Image (cartoon, rainbow, N blue to C red; front, side, top):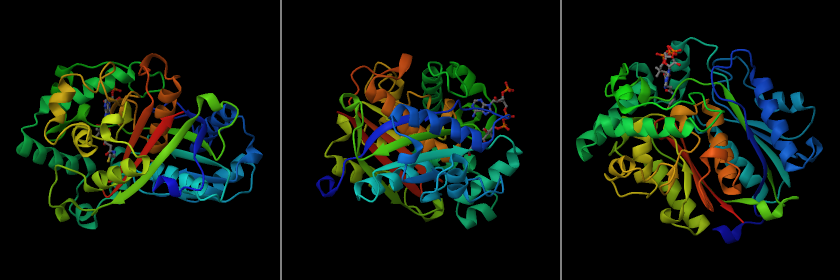
Amino acid sequence: MAEKFKNKVFILGASTTKFGELWSRSPRDLAKECVFQALEESGLELSDVEAIYVGNMLSGSLGGQDHLGAFFAEELGISVPAMKIEGACASGGLAMHAGFTAITSGLYKNVLVVGVEKMTDYKPEEVAKALMGAGADSEREAGATFPSLYAMIARSHMEKYGTTEKDMAEVAVKNHYHASLNSHAQFPHPITLEQVLKSSTVSSPLKLLDCSPITDGAAAVVLSQESGVRSQESVNIIASAVATDTLGLAERKDLTTLKSAVDAAKKAYQMAKVAAQDIDVAEVHDCFTIAEIIAMEDLGFFPKGKAASAIREGKTRLGGRPVVNTSGGLKACGHPVGATGVKQIVEIYRQLRGIAGKKQVKGAKLGLTHNVGGSGATAVIHILKSL
Ligand code: COA
């Protein structure tokens, strides 16, 4: 498929804001902060931007403002095609996919992809209800929440593969350790297995420290047909693939895998002409700790049922391979839902350029992002390569 692309897709600049409870910040200034930083890094001017894709899920249901494409174009003072892309927690990944297709088709030369979400200004029950807009109607009517849906997924994996609460806690400990090296993370501090296992139950078997938090934040990426002024440090997106599955868990045959992620990963590996074993570093959608265990298996990093032991042995921690969630992941860096898919790209871009600071993976050449919407109704995979 790759040979059919009209153009290569270069990342020229990328930035994120700090993630966290940012009560004094608006979506407007969060997005502007990272857009201007990404543009400055790219060497391009605002007038070079030919289109804007905004990844966001909740601006309408929580903030009352849905029209984010034109909203940000006006805010930036430019008049270009601009649109909000919504796909639940995969909104950012889908916005990246839209930017990727615009460049590969030859329609635009330079585009801006922004992901933004403001969640902490609202009551937890309002946020939980708004997030359930990504679930099946029957799940919403039954009063399910995402922690309860992923708790069912966790129970299935425990039953089928013997996965334990301790195995899930290992994911949280690793990701908090990585976040402790990331000053932009919401929870930049290490935690212990005991702390995870003793944290309060949210939806059994998932506890507070198995869950990603409620987060504010934004991320931006400048994509171009051309490598720009730093061609020797260029990073290419060599695959962008999306797949979907049923919204509801009840319609699925197997809850221990996300079929959308398996399908999207297969397409992405084919497009990039690489295999799972070639990946040096990955950012995956650990909205709950069980989701990272399943992602490791769905992406082909480890055989089915073997990811938990690999994580326990430190294979996905800094120093292992593939290193997973160097940013701290959704669990510890935070999960501003529409921004997450773009933030994952920013992290991998920095890893491949060798500018990821204390959390740098030595010699990383090939990276992957895995962004999931709902409980797996949408999955978006990108593969990035340093030149
Ligand atoms: N990880 C680590 N610490 C967390 C945390 C998390 N996920 N969530 C909250 N905390 C901390 C807070 O900082 C706070 O610490 P403090 O007392 O020192 O200030 C404390 O735990 C209590 O926080 P609070 O905001 O009162 O928690 P809560 O009970 O309202 O919410 C969850 C906790 C897990 C229910 C909430 O974060 C949640 O719903 N997460 C899932 C979000 C989701 O579904 N996203 C979509 C995924 S598909």
